[in-house]
Image (cartoon, rainbow, N blue to C red; front, side, top):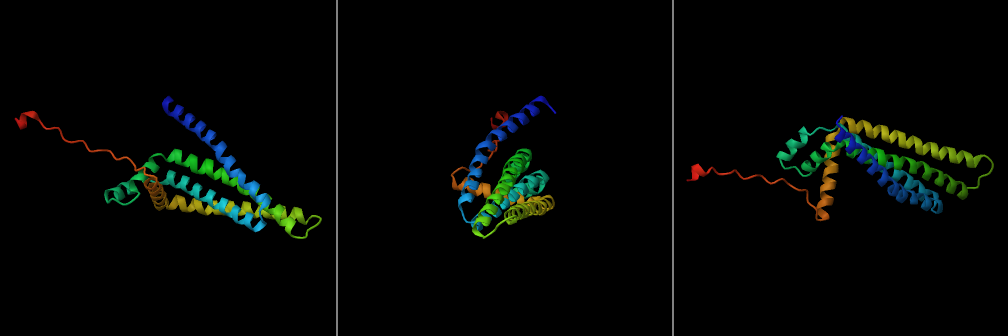
Length: 201
């Protein structure tokens, strides 16, 4: 690898590490909410966190597995989101780092912490004594772990074998968000042919 490429990779990795600190802090506030919420509300929030982590993990893998060729054909037909999909595929390394390494890993850690909070609320709401509280804690965290691993395994299989529709869907979401915020993707202007003065004269 060239030094410039290595330097860019290191800078991007440091930027991701810096961004992950406030992002994890924001997500970590959910565990504070889980300590006060009912166990069924916390369980629903844990499932939502797992779903978000699996979704972003799928996007990261699909970006690495996708190819530009089908999106160029779609862009020629002016299919909505095709140009944005090309941008995603060309930046697959960065997309995979953000989606899989940052959001996916943070969601995995928080789902485990949330499962422990849910187990604590469940043990308080039900009359338990002795070793039943520990059993509920172990069972809840094991269930959350199994759900996370199973969902990620299914998501990775889908992302590897069908990356094109996943990236096109993500590109359409991004392009719609840019349109709603008033930011449209820049398009390169075609250069006008320069007229030969000898022919015009």
